[in-house]
Amino acid sequence: MELRLKIPRINDDPSDYDVLFGLWEQLASDETHQTVVLDFAQCDFLRQNGVAFCLGLARLAQSYGKQIAVENLLNENVAINLRKNGFMEALGLPYDRYPSSTAVPVREDVCRNVEPYINYLDKHWLTGRGISLSADLKQIILSTVVEAYTNVFDHARSRIGAFTCGQFYPRLEELALTLVDFGIGIPATVRRRLNQPDLNAETAMRWVFQEGNTTQDGPRGNGLKILKQFVKQNEGSLDIYSENCHARISARGERFTLRGRKFIGTVVQIKLKSDDKFYSLSSEDDSDELFF
Image (cartoon, rainbow, N blue to C red; front, top):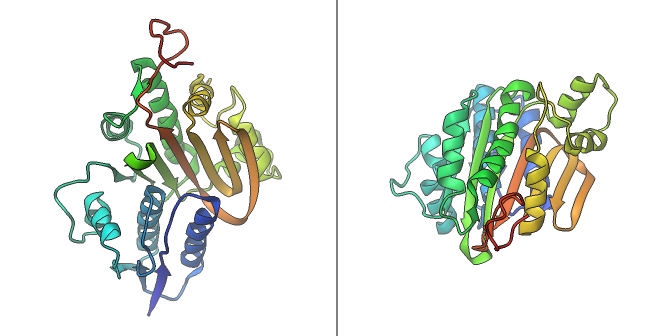
């Protein structure tokens, strides 16, 4: 007997995350099937968030003792992308030995491994992708992503670790990175941190985004504050989904939305505009290009 998870077209609108979270619900509630099939028959486009999430679903199924199969990769572009970005290789299936020039390879970490993760982000995400950052600004952006990454292992209690994938979209002038974990979620972590078990998801997420607050031990730097300023200046975005709350930071401001679909885990996505402008901190004022 098999559980067939039908993967449709996945973009990165809130409705697309509802679809992904629905697949997670199917898997999490299944107690009878021994095999899980990732069925791509209806998939003609799959963004990096879908790649990271689907690999996480596969590992979650395996942690339940289930077998994994991938079927019906009918769309040539989707099939090529999954062969080149490391998804097929991760599942022991045929893959392309020549990686994509636009993909940030899918990566899975079952334990905390900070230095290789920083090197991965620096090499594959923020280097040579049509965006120019000062060394100090790049370091702050990397450290903020790494804080989300280390939270998976320090607090989220994800039994299968973290999954990261990115993509450079030249025609859209967009550089995206998604980090997924299947742990207890940010609101649950905040409730434990504040000892407020009845705190709702939106209030908990708003607390995380307030300057100086952190689920980590010790003081927090200005990393998240600067990242928020940067995505606004750059016309990018920062999206976080956890439990039934969606937090979005963009040039339009900060928005926190409660949604009908619930996901016990966390998805963090950063999108940057690859506009070939030079960005630096406002204190690095030796450049007359756009900066903040």
